[in-house]
Image (cartoon, rainbow, N blue to C red):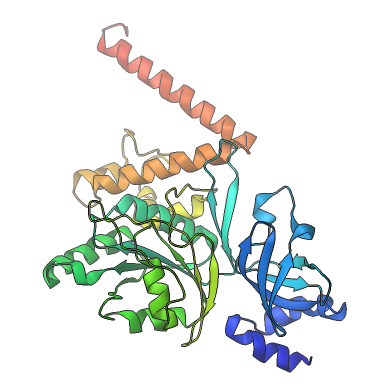
Length: 363
C-alpha cells in the first residue's frame, strides 16, 4: 500500500505529516501504522489502512503503568500473524493521567495524543466547583486545552439561572471556554462540534454527566449505550466501561471514557497553577517569596480574600489540591519529602510558640 493511501485512510483519525515522519523507521521494517481505538485486557483494536485489526500488547507491557498502550496511541503493528502484536507506540504528544486509588500512588493513563479535554458537567444537579477544578488541573497538566461543557441545559428553569451557573463556572475556570449544550433539543451542539472538529478530544466527567449522550449526538448515531440518571441525585451508572475512539463525521476524533468517580491528581503542580492563575498572580505581591498564604504578614492572597476580591472557597480548594499533589509527589521524590518534613516542623514550632505566648510563658 502506498504512503498516500495510508495517509488518506488514517487522516480521519488524526494522522499527519509529523506522525508519518515519526513512523518512517517502522514503515521501513514493514510494520503497519495504526491508532488504538480501544484497549481491553492486553488486547487492543487498532484502525489501520487495512481496516480494524485486533492486536496483542504483550510486547508493550512495561512495569511502568504510564507506558502501557492506551486509547489514542499511534502504534506499529505486525502486518500478519495470529495473533498480531503491537511492537511499539510512537512518542505521545500529550497524555491525560490521574492517580489510581491504590496506596502505591501509581498513575493511570486515560488517553493519549489529545488536543482538547472536554469536561462534561451536568446541570441537572448542584454544581461541584471543586470537582471541576480537579478535572481542569489534570487537563492542563496533560498538555491539552480544557473545555467545560455544561450538559442538560434544557433542565435549567430559566435563562437568568443558566447565566448565573455559567458565570460561576467561568470564575472557576479562568482561560477555559465554557459551553452549554442540550443533547435533547440540540442547543449548543453546533458550537461543540466546531471545537472537536479540530483534532482529538477526550470526553471526561462523572457518571450521569451525559457523556455518552453527547458522544452519540456528535457522531450522529447511537454508538454508545445510554441509561437515565437517578432522579434522587442525578447520578448515572457506568454505561461506558472502556475508552473508545470515534471518528466524527464533521471532522475530528472523540475518545469517550467511563464515568470517573475518583479524580486524583498525579504530579499536576503546573496544572493546579493554571487553574488558580489568579492566586499565582496575587502571590507575586506577597511580602515573602515562599508565602504559604496561611497567616503570614503581608500576604497579598489573604488580603484579596479579606477584600472580597478572591472567594475563600477558591483559596481553600487551591490549598487542598496543592497538599494532595505534594503528598503524591513526595512518595516518589525524596527532596519533596524532606521539604514537607521541614514545613511540618516549622508549622509545629510556630504553633507551639503561639500556645506558649497565649499562656504567658514567653519572657
